[in-house]
Length: 250
Length: 310
Image (cartoon, rainbow over all chains, first blue to last red; front, side, top):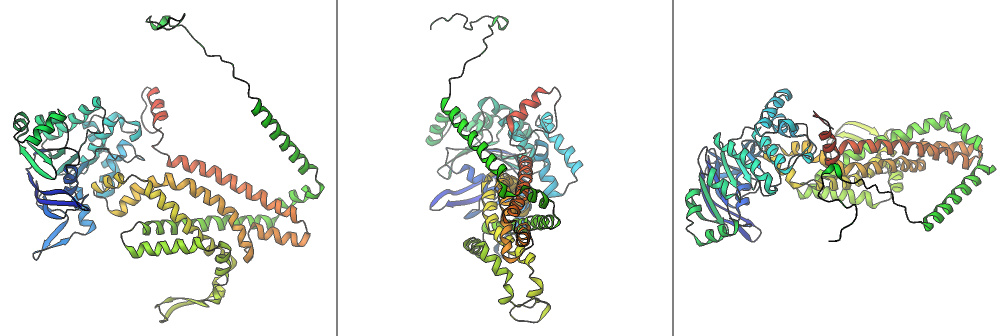
């Protein structure tokens, strides 16, 4: 579903991604971990082109992200084509970024109604189903500021799902939450993984990675240091840097 | 820990003592004296105004409903609403240009605000009124002296009213541009990212997500500009704009009731600004939607089956 090939990315003089390659199969769940500033969030943001890359290639579902290849040369995609690519990629942010001037229900309806032109009553029915799925049907009329962090994040997941994405990206979805609210969000993500959604998850939740992840990638200093089956690598980390990192987060 | 008689212990809630707070406030002699002085000054001011025979209250009352005054009032309202509408449209355009990726668009917008904020409004009004001296004709057609499809004489197009609209509207746009720009910049960049991630185009992001949130920041100063504009329209009197002040001046040139007519105009200006302030209050409440978390949440939780919007 996702193929990332030799991706490099600089912010000014600092190279945050120094040639990263990885594959996510259809229905696979890849957890990306690493110390802060290691480039793991940047990598995720490159996949749905919130950041542009300096070299390398990223494909999602066979489509090259950001460019079209014609006559052996790359051409920048038009803004409309870029938007179309993003419709198929759901993104969940660390700080939720729900639209504060719209209710939970309106937040979930916004994408289908505005982007896809779905009729309002149809979008409402579907949005209610999604809110039901994340356990928030009774909060449909609430504004984001009236919801807890965990509830806001679950609405944000429902908002992304409303676009029927092929791929879901999670950028530290539980890092801004109070500890007792983390599990309700992870439960929704666990359900989503079980339903066969392809997911890339940047996280510090090793328990979630061990339980749900098909693959675990440890990034440090802009390169992939360790990768493998999460249950195996977490039980027996091969690299010293990964071992040190686990010592700090576990 | 010292034991205090009556302090709450580990007993059940039913046995908790009731401890009302019925405290006495300390005296505030400074505040009392200040209030007394202010009250005295107010009464004295009111007295001097009421007993003053030079103010001609009967004339003021008689002219408040005068047809010419009401006509001027209507022109003032029209000028204010229309030039604010022009100003808002130009302001949004200039603000969006200012935030664009193109240096030419940013430069054009910066030049606009720089020029129209840099010259006095009075000068601009007189300039627009006399634009015919610079451009005797206006036309639609091929630029750079090419053939024209339509052509008008400046003298026919530029009435005091259109000159006033141009002057006030374009000047206002320069100030509104800064207000709108500040509003757009106040919106969390994460909002734009979330909207883009749903696949919205730049236009949709701006219209559906950024501008509605920017309105919270834009509305209060815009209300301020509107109230200011109600009175700025009086500057149009230098080009005989037929608005409230011009009309009042024409009347006092005939009946010599200078002060009375100025008070008539002032009373109407105050009525307009009061109405505008009330309108601003309701508009602000409208755009505060979703930003009063706690009271609404508490209210809803108190309702047994509460749903829907607060």
